[in-house]
Length: 252
Length: 252
DNA sequence: CGCGACCTTGAGTAGGCTCAATGCCGGTGG
DNA sequence: CCACCGGCATTGAGCCTACTCAAGGTCGCG
Image 1 (cartoon, protein in one colour):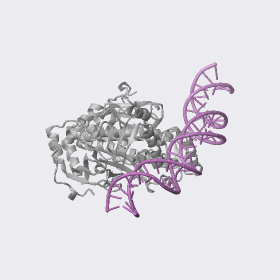
Image 2 (cartoon, helix red, strand yellow):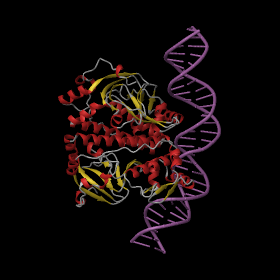
Image 3 (tube, protein in one colour):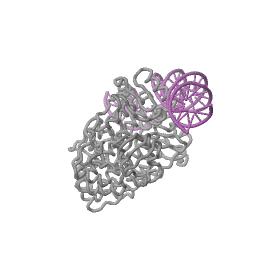
Image 4 (tube, protein in one colour):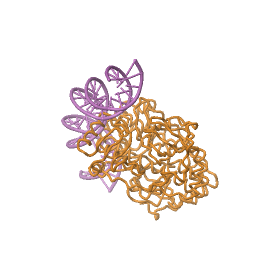
């Protein structure tokens, strides 16, 4: 797990990284690209279900997701679990671990993943030599805080069906941003209803019944590895909020 | 509101800022201190109840809380409100607004406050010239994300009494860190039970009943402008978690 | 064919919600 | 000085959303 020996050798050179072409990511200067290329120490391939980070452990690495997805969570001593956020391609993860001594959350791969690996010390050089990239790191931190804010609003103040609607839209948007939406409105994310329950602070049974309502009313279609949005208008009404427009962001 | 004309003239010079003496804040170099002093453009005094930031507006300012406290929240169109976090002396607020175009949350003063004012553009100079301070800004962003993680775990997965216990301990610790705890275990924070309810995702009535249990069992004492922890051990048991140890942090 | 992972469904319960009233200040204006 | 009002805390009653416990059902895989 996170063992450098597993790092794949077939590196994709950063300047030809397929992610970088997506329009959500801001163009980098040649200099920035060169730095990032050097900052990157390898690639890591992990299987679905692997732990990328473990609460309480410390971590020497930072990652950028190249492909696949993961989720970040915290647990209570008795096993209750709260999923905090999801990680998709382009997401920069592990900053907390590089900045504090000890991870306060765990991250588990939802699917097989490929990750760009960076060393914790490299981050310091980044701050010393590249103001623009430093700002980007901060920007990304602020953005993930924003997502967390939304999530907290949902869990604290929305009803079960509103929470489901909001989450389904949120995931759809994030997947779409990185061009992973299969057919239009087909969201391919390998989550189970248990994941949804743990994200929304609901029980599995109640989540199932709530999703069943959405399915019965033909608002969505649900399959094990993907779902489809059939009635986006209705889903948005239920979520009771605008879907914030996608913003151009850095890819480190 | 946030009007530069209100900026008080009686600036405290940063090098003699009383906050800076507290041991929670890391010592700054003379150079860092000089930069921050220059970065600071004034002070702002606001009354309890004022809005520091408004969801949907944009903001040209960043603040560091010098005295007083505030809370950060989001609302749903129908008025349901979720408090996301509290702001105490030493907290650096408004980063989201400086980094994104538009605020995604509001901040309201709980008490009269004095704030250090910084200009958004100054932040860019900070990143260009001071790697250490840039890292600090990122560190602070990561830290507030951590607090949010804890909060989300609470709201999503803890019972009402566990949530109350956790929040009361959390606030106590934050207040203590900056040396604002009155008598030992006396936490002076001007929050109402409505604030607690909105923080924890509970109704006012249920919050009241839950607090009543804590009061009846002599775990805490509750007054309008402060509460006192009578039985910290019990409160910690209820919260079902360690109170994370205070960490040395930067003060910008 | 059995097993594990996931989804479904039923039944009963309870934690937390809403509505509604009351009590208790402290401030304000007549 | 008193009456009134607004903000906050408190309490009762009834309800409902969401939870728990418990069984299946389906599907893919070894």
